[in-house]
Image (cartoon, rainbow, N blue to C red; front, side, top):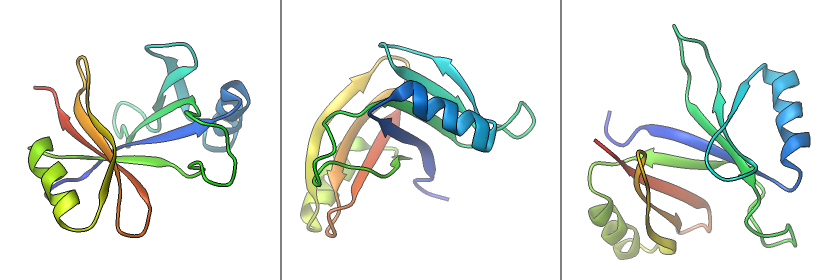
Length: 124
């Protein structure tokens, strides 16, 4: 299947409170990774690892315009081609190409309906 869902991100004003919520509700395990208030989420076990999750501090306060849903990123083979396709088809790049060491190179964009979406060309 081309461009599968690779990861999801949960943004939170109170990361500790949100982490405790998901630990209790879904029994997910959280691993500190990177900057403060940033966690990898383990949604499965070694046999069935599930989808990779991330939790981090919200980038902007919720004011009626900030994102309040899960942040999903799709694995793509060519981030530049996807960037061009987003813009050519009515989407808008909202976070230009960025690189995360050992993870890959990504973008965030709004689709034609204003939904916030991520695309990540994974590191090899």
